[in-house]
Length: 187
Image (cartoon, rainbow, N blue to C red; front, side, top):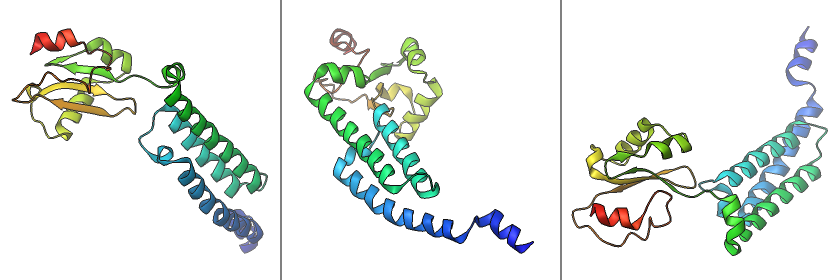
């Protein structure tokens, strides 16, 4: 009975040892690979960064737990993904066409006291999420907020109204839903 329980829980000690060795090999190599590929691999993620991160986790887990996935295969797959991510991010820096295909634009969701319902619907964001983000940013009233922008990494940026209005809106000029004319009319 003890042998059946041991086999059911552990499989066998050889398998457990293989998992330990695989983890000890994979862990430092993945850390080194991520360091070499840059901060982007672990930073605020857009869609394609997220995909690579999830895939790396899956590949690493498979190599550690599954005896049918050799470490070299997992390292090759991880390296190819990191190389593709590096190439794509390099491509987006040098080609606006690639950037337009891969990256989303920031989007105005709240402007000058009004929720932009079409933008909220398109981006699948609820008003309560915006209100929560405003509270998290330390504001008690919507009247204190000039804009709320959904950034490309899915974070909400809260831009407060300031007593000294400036005409320099360069940080928001490329946000979908922002227009210089509307901003000047509101000022």
